[in-house]
Image (cartoon, rainbow, N blue to C red; front, side, top):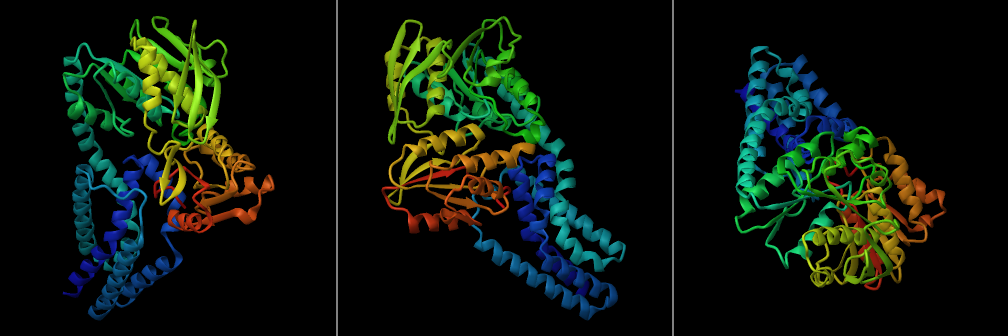
Length: 521
């Protein structure tokens, strides 16, 4: 009876840690290599000293006094920790909570089987004294066998759905497919293209950030209808061959490369890998296809395109030889105006979107729309009426305060442009940021440069996560930023408390990047 109580307490003590482990596995895209990197960077925050000592002491007590009364005492200790974990969990306000998808439910079923197997082994080997230590470490370590066991199942399900999606695409033989990729600017460009061409075409775009195989498959299977004439497909990649596989899957005839930069270096391994992978969008186009590329980006401009059977259209702001170029750009706190030059055409554009990189995104969309013979008048209307892209330099009012929400996928170029936008804002300027991630060996230096660039462009800096933002803090110190106006907090909630205490409705608050919980520390 006391042994059964001990096993019950063992399971209860692991419930919340198991939830955390699954949560982090989900935020790391269910990929064991990414989870391993996260675990390596965060195990010190998981294993707090008082927890380690407490669970070791409980194991030692069971080893030395493995009697019924001691099993009851240790069971009570485990149940107290279970209650503590639960109370701490209730206090947390996750940026991206665990989503109980069908995949997660399958993983939970496998975890249950693994725990039952673990209990059986412990019982047969008479090693009950190990249960407290196992309760501490197993929730995090069982993710590894879980990943190995479930991956073949998930691959089989994924392949089944992807084959269904391929057949749907084959049935749409006249469908014009536009692929969009880049280190940044993909989602904005997709939304802008949709705004321009939807006046003349019945078009479908992948929603939100559905730029993975699963997201694209869901879009095709559940949303693509025979009435659609154009499919605008955002394609993301953070490792070698991922984009190549997506291009071969969707088979676009028009490919847009918005930008290339040192993003996801930790998983790509090198900048050359990023360049070669992103340019697969152009290299894999069919004969007669059209590649639309940003030649203001030095990596794209210097890339030697090997596919000679396609048409290449270029765009840029600083590149005088671009096929589509913007000039006479005027930025205001409420939007942007500029003139588009193409051959003998010079057309004025007005947009609610902010920042130079949005001008580039608009140019790429204009080039794409012109390939589809959309009129200049329709393009002007689309540019003027397009909505701001959510979380990407989105100007909005929250509780009466003016925010610029640039929370998604912060990167070296985008964050720099966001600061340029802030430089044009009136009154005091605040920035709330946890910095940038996935930059591999250059992450610390890039974040330090980010801190340096804040000088004279923002007045108050609020850094979220002491460890994560250490390099930004050092950069601010190096340029003699007024450190009395720099705050370091642990959570976004604390950051907003400072904003609402110090800012006024006439000020501007930039939200630069919104890291998942796995990366905020």
